[in-house]
Amino acid sequence: MPTAYRQDMPPEGGFEMIKYKRNLPFRGPGGLAILGGVLAVCTYGMYRVALGNLERRELRREKTWARLHLVPLLLAESDRDTYRRQQAALARETEIMKNVEGWEPGKSVYNNPKHRPQEFVVI
Image (cartoon, rainbow, N blue to C red; front, top):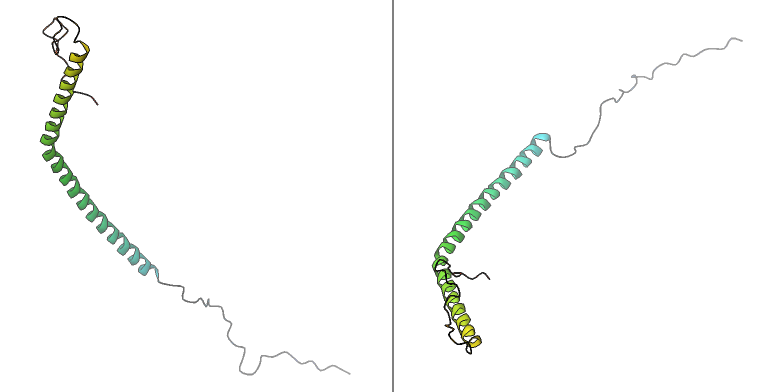
């Protein structure tokens, strides 16, 4: 008895389409949006840097003018301090050398008139 062969045939209406396209979900903003965001952040940052530079420049100018106006006061204070120190040194010299005959307090110990004593005090 011969076997009845049945050929495999496609279903009625055919096979469904093969899904070969990628089906990726939306993953966030596009490249142009990201580039725009980066440019906006960089622009804002540079704006803040410029404002900081202006403020720093103004503070430096103010500091310079404050120092210029304080110089006479500081010089006068230095002169008063130097005078006070000289008078204290003269008093100490007078106290130490009171028993030495012929000693003149404050007179230079050098016979050479070219020698000049120190005119400022290094603290």
